Image 1: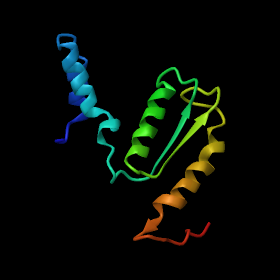
Image 2: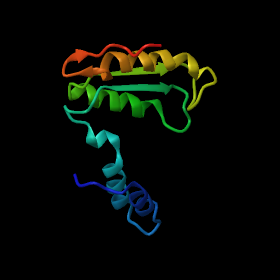
Image 3: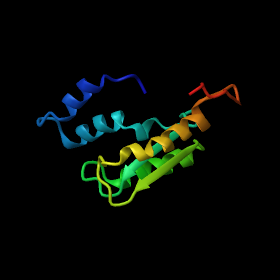
Image 4: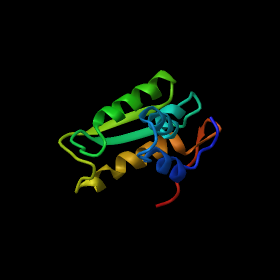
Amino acid sequence: MKPIRFAQAITRALDEEMARDEQVKVLRELSPFEFVTKETPPTLIIHGDADPLAPIEQSVRFDGKLASQGVHHRLVTKRNTGHVWLDIAKDFSVVADWFDQHLLQVEGQKRAKPPS
């Protein structure tokens, strides 16, 4: 796929004069789902199951796509939680642990954690 400018593509996709099938085509070109490959970096998804803006099914589907390509991944589902939650700081350790486990690696070896 060739690089695409996000703002231009969204503007095109929201054009009311564009045919529905063309809108869907443009939006698919922007979807992270379409870019998952075996080379996708380790991916952590944290999603509230009561999110009114982005249905949990989107993350479940994305998680499945990551699995199908053999990508290290984890989906953390926040029960009874919407798009944002007040105690989000409690999840920072989940994110930090993910970074330590998957993103601090250099050529297959873990780097030492920086001093606190």
